[in-house]
Length: 229
Image (tube, rainbow, N blue to C red):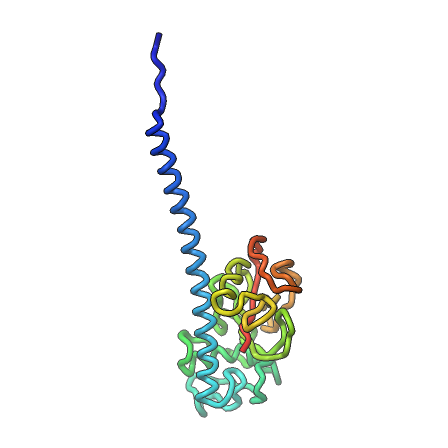
């Protein structure tokens, strides 16, 4: 009679240990990727806010709204300014939200070079930065964000950000509540050719309108937020 052979308990244990190590490595790798994305978003938001306040401190005006920011006045490589009313809006044919990026980079407060071909040019790669998910940012004076919405200046993160990333950004940089504090959920998508906000009905159920809890387990990928100044 032929003797049957098989795996010993030791061999099976070794295989299970190897599988466990592989799974642990995959999960750890995913955690590291998530952490890197969170840090990237926080760093981008903090850098832009610092640039915004630095510009305001130096020129006593807001980037984009600065009425005398031209090549013959105070900032080189700037052709257009705003109306100087202290609000970043599309006013008098000038897209102040878009011009703001030109002012910030030309004045040396942000890296890169964002230029405007015309004062009312829409949002393009040449004049507006993007978030890590390849959608445009926006500096604007509005109340397009969750919770008690008071019209004020804020930085829109752009959309296409997974809800679990925004929830972690909120926990690390603010209060973890999507409808309170300085970091809140926003339906901003910036899809229009004029650069004006497009408030679309997307990312339903990203957070609770009553409690502000982020629904991080729903795996919604098309989300955005606003950092309030």
